[in-house]
Length: 580
Image 1 (cartoon, helix red, strand yellow):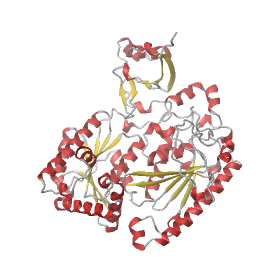
Image 2 (tube, rainbow, N blue to C red):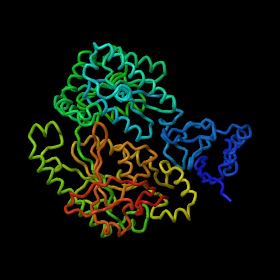
Image 3 (cartoon, rainbow, N blue to C red):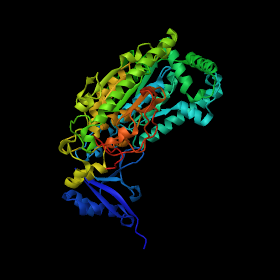
Image 4 (cartoon, helix red, strand yellow):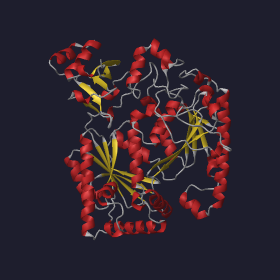
């Protein structure tokens, strides 16, 4: 006889989370779902009365937008979904998991939507700034999305448009570009209505009339607006941005270098003729950035939380490409026993990784210096990444735990890089937690991002304490090597690679692997290097079984890793493929 189809869900009320496996046929209506809460939890009288009246306030998190919303249909329930019963007048579903960190400004019930409108000539870093703001706010848990009008133009009209298309005296081109601008606006408002919090409208928005149109539409939607104008007067930065656009923009894919730059310069000339800077007489809130962060002017900014955080974030930005290296510490004694937390020493394998890491860095410094000597002074100035002694200024940051300190000989110790605090679970394995603290184990499995260890931390807590590190990494103009721990590296990696918040606790970060990230205007380049032999790394089962590891003839020739597998363990756990 064929077994009935079952579905696993997690139901939450207050600090408690319970796992339920039941036949799908038993979930035919919201009333069936509500009955689970009646049997699994002791509910207060006010909720019992609402249940009898068929008015049960159940909330679920959308899988794509990560926004919580009140359920209206049983079909909303998906495999391993977390369904939450909220008390009346509780406007913060995000902070309801066990001890979860409450971030009230990013709940779906918050009404103060916000739109940042980018302004400026092409090649002034608008898209770079827009993506940076989006990455930062999403990392903090604020649903944010960039709506780039250029992407709409490429999708609807094609990427290969001649410079004349952007001529303000070209009526056909102007009409088509206006249609694309309105289409992007409509999509942004629709996304905000469905639970988004911050929209970033990315276009030149180069005239007062265009900005008045945007302001009028946002006013009709009761949405707060802040204009961000990027003004660039430094010819070196403009030249660097032109080269970056030529290399990475879809508009010039397959176009010879000289031709691409010529076409782009003609496009800029067309926009320049009609450009009108943002002025106080427009009676709008605005931020003016000069040369991508050298100077910032703020006018009439609302006195709310997010605008202030964004201004402080923008003060740390620049466009100089530089590598950021992330790695976990070498294998520790606790790794070999799958224990979380602790402050144990390195194993012999971990000590060999520390030596391999040092050799690799020294080799990179030597090769970067040699490469810098080959380049002309102009090349070093324009590209920013070829200075002779660039990597000689490498900064190394570690946590204050001895396994991270022992992985590098030269470092700055920072407590905010310490591993996630496992509280009462410190020193335990996940198998021990499952046996001795099953409710905690189930709560963590239900919502790993927001689960907080008893008397410890959640991933959201770690993200909050890493915010100063993000500011400092954005401010740094020289390479930085961060030697830290699984949860910490996951959070930093999620920021630079723009991973959704709920993916953060599941990012694959094997031991004895160096991750090189290079932020660019259109994304973040990544390389992974395995610095030890496979048999050496396998001594403690510390590396992902999905990765292959080769001992390079020279550390700098280590082959970049491109594979990654989702994992659930954090802290010291050595078996990074164990799904707990």
